[in-house]
Amino acid sequence: MLAVILERVATPAEAASGCEETFWWAAGITALAIVPCIVLAGARAEARARGRRPDPGVTEEAIAESVA
Image (tube, rainbow, N blue to C red; front, side, top):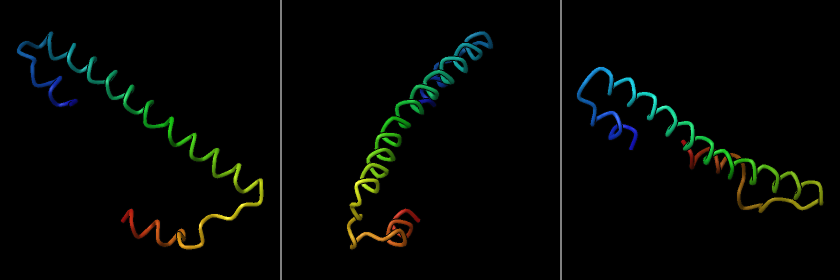
């Protein structure tokens, strides 16, 4: 999506504008991606505060292996 914004430039002035527009799209996408991270971190902290244990079948090692 970000490449498409830069792809439609024809002049140097449009290139500068395209870079600015791409920056704001990237900033917006990043802001939207941070929201679920904050919500999930809060839910995990709340579960620990209540004394709930995470699912024993899902270990931190299993999560690390699935991400790698």
